[in-house]
Each structure stands twice: as C-alpha cells, then as structure tokens.
Amino acid sequence: MKKYISFLIGSLLLLIIGCQQNMPKTSIVTFHPEQPKWNGSLTVSFTPGAKSPLVNADSVTLQALFIPVNPTDREILENGKMNEIPMQKYGITWKAKMVPEEATGCIIFQFEAHDTYDNNNQKGWEILLYSEDGKPVKGGYSALSQATGEGMVSFLLNLRRLDADRALALYKKEINLYPDNWRARAVSANIRYREAIKNNNKTEAQKIETELAAYLDQHPRDIKLLEFAYSFFYRPNPEKSKQIVQQIGKLNPKHRYVLNNALIKIRKIKNVTKRLDELMRMEDRVKGTRFYWSWARYTLPDLIRTKKWNTILKIGRQMIDRINSAEMFYPSYTKEKIESKKEKYLYTPLSAMATAYYKLGQNDKAQECFTKLSRITLYPHQEVAFIEEYLQFLVDTKQWDKAVDIGKKAIEKAKFNDKIVKLFKTAYIKKTGDAKTAEQIVVDAKKKSGVYRKEEIAKTFITNAKPAPAFTLKNVDGEEVSLASLRGKTVIVDFWATWCSPCKASFPYLQKFWEEHQKDPNIALFAINTTERIKGAARVKAIKKLMAANNYTFPVLLDDKNSSIKNAFEVGGIPTKFFIGPDGKIYFVEIGFHGPTMAEDMNIRLKLIKEKLRLLK
Image 1 (cartoon, rainbow, N blue to C red):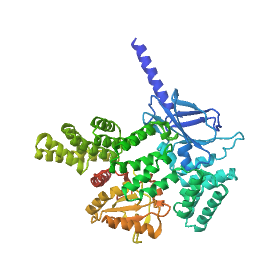
Image 2 (image 1 turned 120 degrees about the horizontal axis):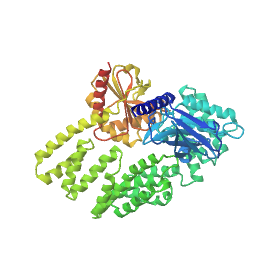
Image 3 (image 1 turned 30 degrees about the horizontal axis):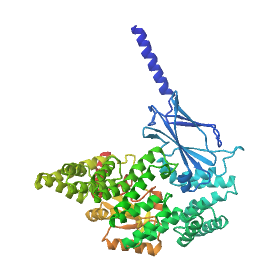
C-alpha cells in the first residue's frame, strides 16, 4: 500500500514538473486562421506564461475590441464593439471563438480574470482582417494605425499603445496598398501634421492643412470627416473650426458639437435667471441625444440656485433612467467600465434630488438618496462633496449620532474639508455638550488620517521608475527652463489648462504647497499649461490674468501648440502631476484633483521619495 501511495505521489510530481516544463516563460497568443475574414470564424488561443498574472486563473475572459475600418478616434469610441467571451480550457491553453463583423479593420485583445489582466505589458495583442484576395481589408492598416497612434484604445482597454512613429508607418502601408483611400490620408493628417511641427517644417504643415481643406471640399457631407477636421483645425485655425461646426449643424442640428457650442454661449450669461431660461429652452433640442447628460449636469446647479425643486426631481429621474438604459454607454465599453461609470454618473442626479426632497420636506426620500450614494464608489472629489451634503442634512434633521459617526470616519480617512470638520464638531457638541473632547477627537482623527494617507500613497510609489521625458519650455515671461538644469532636485510638474475646472479647483492647494517650498533649493515646481484653445499673446494674457486675480505665484511653463510635452509624458487627462526624483526618474503620478488634502499629500510624496531613494542607495 505504501509503495502504491509513493508511486501515485511520484507520478503526480512528474506530471506537475512536466506541466511546468511545458509552460512558456511568457504568454503565447495565436490565431486560427492567421488571416481572418469578415463573417468567418476566428479562434483565439491563449497560453499564460509562467509570470502571467493569469497563470493560475480558474476562468478567463477574452476581451476583444473590434475597430472599424478607416476610423477617427471618436469612431472607435462610437462604432467600435467590445466582445467579452468566456474562454474554454484545454490543458494549459485557453480558447475562444468569435466571428469578426463586416467593416471591422482590426481587433485588439487582452485577457481578464477577476479584474486581473494579461495584456502583453499593456500593449495588448492585435490582428488585421483580410479580404478574399489575401490582402488586409481596405482601411485595415488605417484602423490599426489609429488604434496605435491615438489614445482611445488605451482608454477603452487600459492599455498604453501610444506610438506615433508606428502609427505613421501603418498609415503609409495603408496608402501604398490602397492609394485611393482618401479617408486614410485625411485621418493620417493629424499624425503627419504633428511630425511636421516637431521637425519645424512649416511648409509641410501648411501643405497638410491645405490637403485636409481639399478633402472637406470634396466630401462636404461626411460628418465623421467634419468632426475630425473640427478637432484638427481647432488650434491652428479657430475660424475654420467655427465654419466646420456650422457645416455640421446644417447636416445635423442635434450634433454634439453644435449643441456644445450653444451650451458654451449660454453658460457665459451672468444673470442666473436669464441663463436658466435659455437652458430650459434648450431642453427639447437635447432630449433623446447623448448630449442630454451634459445639458442636465450644467442645468441642475442653476435649478438649485433658483429653488426649482420639482423640476430638479423631474430631470434627476430622467437622468437616472438614462443611466440605466443601454443608450447611455458606448458599445466599445467593457462591462466593468459601464458599471464603474454608472456609479460615478449617479452622483449628480442623486445629490441634486436629495437636496430637492429635503427642501420639499420629504426627508425620508432625501435619506433614501443619501443612502444610495453611500453605497456606491465615487470619485474622490465627489466623495468629499457627498459627505459634506449628507452631514449638513443630518445636522439639519438633528441626527446627531449618525452625523458624529460619519464625520469622524471621514476625517480619519482623509475625506474631509473645513466644513465637514465644523459639522462634526456641531453634531458632537449637540450630542454631548463637550466642546473640548470634540476638538481632541478632531486632532486625533487628523493624525490617524495622516498615517492612513501615507499608507495609501505609498502603495502608488513606482518601483520600476523610468526617466522623465526631457523638455525645454518657456515661462510666461519668455524665459527658458529645462528639466536637465534641475537635475539633483525633486521636480513636480502639473499639467493644466485654463478651461479645466478641476485644474483651477486644485490651484489654491498648489499655491499653498508652493509658498511652503519656494525657498527650498532642493525642490522645483512647475504648472505646465497645455492643450489651450487660445494661442500666442492671448494665451499668455489669459494665464497672467488668472494668476493675478487669485494671487497665485507658482511658476507656469508653456507647452508648445501641439502639446508635445504632454504627449511625451503620456498624459491622458488633466490635471496630472508627475513627481520626478533627484535622479530624473518619475516616482509618482497623480491624476485628477482629490480634494483639500492635496498639499499635505504632495508633502507625503516628497518624504516617500526621500525615504525610498535612501533605502535604494
């Protein structure tokens, strides 16, 4: 019996060793056939490598993003299609079948299991679609180029595929294979234009502008081309971009660009009553469009200011109905992205409805809205705003126990502002009559908050840090500043724009940090102004006006008109801060504005960089 058990154990060990020997070091992905066609079967095989995060997964889902032929970046979002397919396991290999749809140019893949991904080091895997003659379909290389050179695929699948050189090479392949593909030539203009500007080739840049204008003249009813051209001409030729919007408006009066321009004009009206009247007149135009959400988001604050409680409830319910409808989200979204966005979107209607119900004396329904908000994951700035609103409601309705509990937890978790602290103290004193203890609880909670924040921020330290992209930029006074000249200092660069509300909301805290450190010879801080809609002297004037009006004194640098430094840092959205160590490597990246603890959190990052680098020596 013992011999038999020993034999079984030995056989099992041999089997395990054999499996380990057969397992590849890196993940292997294969396709059958290697040249798939529209409406034909395609089998994807995935063998996790020894270091793959999915090597021991008990289930794997294939995420395949179908990219349409000849797409603009926007078309990938609107017309791309996400397929999430459960895979079957055969030995150590997972397999799934799919049918590439007609008009698909290429497919981008990654593999997922329980929110963990194998995505080829954030590059994903890709395959072109082929026609019956064995060539890539017309617009296939163009699709692959757009999925490589722009940011939409990176956004949809959390990949990092930005590679302008490869994107341009793929467009050249498309045009060599299909010389008559004018759409590929037109969409490639953006990449070629950037190359011309980077090489200071003004003649070539002008030639590309003329070329695109010619395509517009030849195809005046191609809305997708008009959309692309609007984005293209927005910076070099604002007047041309206005003409394009007018052209789009004649073809589709409810197009988002047309509606957005109308909304921008209305938002400039200073009188709240007049502004709200214009917003409400716009309601019929936005109903049934994707733009309804943007309109409602900007209309609700004015409805609150003018105390239109019943109108708020009506619009809030319509927003929630839209969130729960299939039309709200693009077919290119993963299920995970849809669920995440649903939660974030719910904040706006639910918080407005909670206020309206409370003002109408319907406290039970207001409480119901707050309870729903407390159960969903919000953006950090939403979370602080929600806690403040909820605490105010609890204090107003004399729910002291709940207000004390929520207020204390918020301070301990670094999700507070001065108003939240004040409301907590009010609730505690009303509950106990003990002001001294209330103060001490706040002090202790803030200490705990500091420890908590440091632990959370430490988790985002980049251990495999890479050198920051080099740059030399001018400040608002025309003086040049280079990153190379700052070697040996810890450098913080914060990308922003004058049109960016979260950027401007963060500036009081950036100023606070600057005042604390401006005399420190070992620290440098620069706010890099980028992606501006205004150019030249007008841009500098607007920046100086903003700085002077708010008494901001931190240094500002100007990214070039093509946002080259923003692109070099691979900034997806603004504000985004990069913390560069004395060795020139990036150790922290902070995306977005996360509330009033920003300056303290920046200091924590500085200390962590010092501590970590000391340990690495």
